[in-house]
Length: 288
Ligand SMILES: Nc1nc2c(ncn2[C@@H]2O[C@H](COP(=O)(O)OP(=O)(O)OP(=O)(O)O)[C@@H](O)[C@H]2O)c(=O)[nH]1
Ligand SMILES: [Mg+2]
Image (cartoon, rainbow, N blue to C red):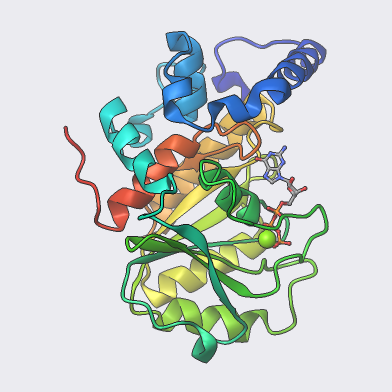
């Protein structure tokens, strides 16, 4: 699959480049929380930051079908409009609301909801934290230790929608993971979209396939988000993205055809994902 990349760069150079990039980026990561700051970048950097899939497409051979990379294509105005939903004000409160360990403890809410599912440590809580980076008072706990999130945690975005952080499956998953998560997914009436997170370094793993089977069986609409893209080398990313796109095309019904690659550390892909969330919860129609 590596031969799909236009040119090969020696792994050592790749590694040094990434290290260099990471050092420089880490100094200024929070600078890019807002799309208005990303818009200040030169076009090439802007695309790389805001549209990681399009950046990846530039490095693929022209024979590779990348049409699904462009299924959801907001323009800059759409992205800025959507971002306003994630900015806190007196009238628009963004905050942790409550937690639940069982479906019958979940709050009854009429506003649309989206949830974040994936293996323990894949970056669910970090992603929610990154989405809320323009509302820094919202406390979202992340940890290096897998199995950190133990409950369904509900975060309200004003009157508009709710984000739900979930415990992870796999290593160190809470014992009652299935009893907590399956009824939620199967019965939640206001659940508009499930975001299933997959690590960009490893691609789909056995446990992810089981989660996908469950989502398919429940007939839920879901989206695959590729996490930690700042850690994955370009070749590795390309291989995983193309394999996953192929899998979606051939084996799934409920999965959105486009992947959403993100880095919660550098906010790459976060602005488009905010826009997608506002769109699927019914608060934004794309202008083109
Ligand atoms: N480099 C990098 N690290 C990340 C990213 N997202 C998460 N991490 C790290 O991955 C680890 C796990 O992150 P969490 O967000 O707590 O993962 P989680 O999926 O919520 O894990 P559980 O609650 O245990 O299921 C932490 O050390 C994060 O800092 C990312 O985009 N880039
Ligand atoms: Mg967590």
